[in-house]
Image 1 (spheres, helix red, strand yellow):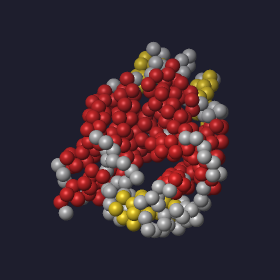
Image 2: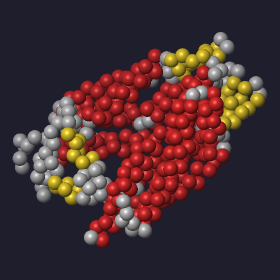
Image 3: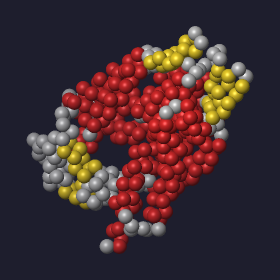
Image 4: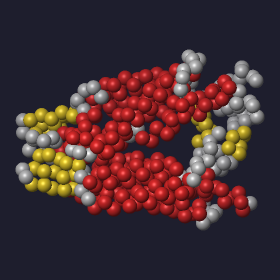
Length: 216
Length: 169
């Protein structure tokens, strides 16, 4: 087993595309390059610039922004001298209060829980690999990251905020809260973090550690 | 190694059919009711878009129309087409069908936008003010459509599209 190999695709390795099963040789990737299937052009492997440090920095920032965006007022509404304030959590809370428990859960999961889990578990796995620590459950965390990704709907929620603004703008004055700015930052940073993070690269590191990749 | 998704066709059909059943109440029942001064006004998904078109700006109305009316419908149609084409062992345009599948998987989550709007409106306009906003049954059915069709898209295995290619050559 050759441990001195660089942590990237080695060029002699065969890989079946996960979308069309075509068997092909993996090219050796340079930072910033992406390998696509030659038949169906599915992304086989990305090799983002900045190594592991860049996604770690971005996910840490995202975690901070997530905490900020959930701890201050999100939107303020003025209606005939009265003021109403809501937070992100308040949106799912209002559904719960209205007797729509299932809906409240769906909104809570997509706007708070899934993004929070995505950020923390990505950070956990990245740190485990970066610091060469055998943290418990790192493999499980890595395997559910890709399943979690579509359920974090921060960007969709932002569009909802925009629509709510227009709809209520007619009958009341709307103000933006502090959280809204943190939330906008969160969307940008987590998009950048996703782009800088390639879970498949980490799988290779796990596989290399146990010798699976060379065992054929 | 990516394992094949087991029972992909059956599971996708089941989820898709359930989503189709939920699609009717999702569009027929109101997603929310605005009650002001004892006078209630209900909004369905479509009437919400029309309201935006008349009172807001049309670009936003267009985005919401695409996200909450067009996308769920197209998603269901595309998934039915993909399932049927796999079962009829079609070999036509495999690459395009894969791209279609990728698009469907990517775009589905944007349909949740209407639910977020209802949640935000309900949170902002609370009881005690001049008006209250109550989420309706339609919102529940609509969320079911979005979530079920997302699961349906996930359980579909795009490799099935390419399987027939191999048998023939």
